[in-house]
Image (cartoon, rainbow, N blue to C red; front, side):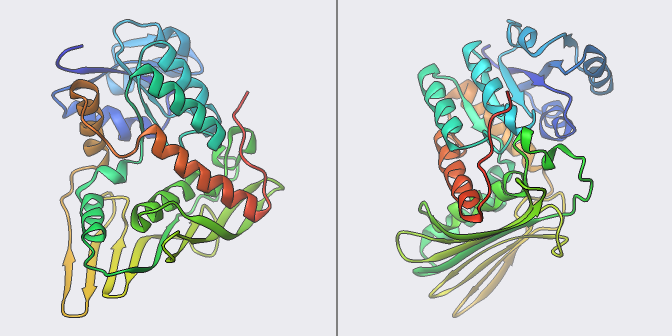
Length: 330
């Protein structure tokens, strides 16, 4: 590996074409070369549909392939940690779908292994690599809003199919895991510090899984925060983030990127402005960052250590809501 990154995909997940297969087609330094799935037939169908050259009979075989430099891990939440560790053991860089692991303890284990390996391990918060998120970070860090008073993020969308794996506790499912990890990551970005969870309330789907979650936070500097996540509730669709300071308000409509309408609005005491951004996919920017890290050692924000901090907040939300922590899938 000198001038491009050869990627193997673990699992024929629906997100994989959007996240890596299509972006790789327009990349000069990335290529998806292999796939493995729960069955060879499933993997072959995926490979034929997306023009992937090699199909492996198992995840282990893919990890043993010397022609694979890096792995994209879009497996169910409860399997993220296990197979990221296996990929590191096999000497592969990893782009791991969010949430990074089932809980903070497992995230810490993976982060320790990532540091020891010297390999790139990136959590796939694709929104963070889009110019919209870069601009949000720039505005908040500039101090133009003045001392922060409150930050909030909502990631709510409808998923009424309750047979979906995102409602399966044995696979580390739940609204806080699937949608809420975005909201937590966003308030961490806006808040600039690691928050304490003050309270949380879940709308349950069964005894252990949340179909929606609200939580209130407090940051060490005194500003407050809130997160709202939903897969099925009266809030059918809400994608937004907001930072309120003494001097103004920053509001983002759809921080997840250009797949839907998105807009950044800044209202200060003496002026108002609105910004929109190009249509290039958040996933394309993410793949750029991943390959730059692998090939050139470029730094990136969604590290394994950053993932530990996000998972720590998610665990605290579940505790505050009276629900059990998610567990790795055996």
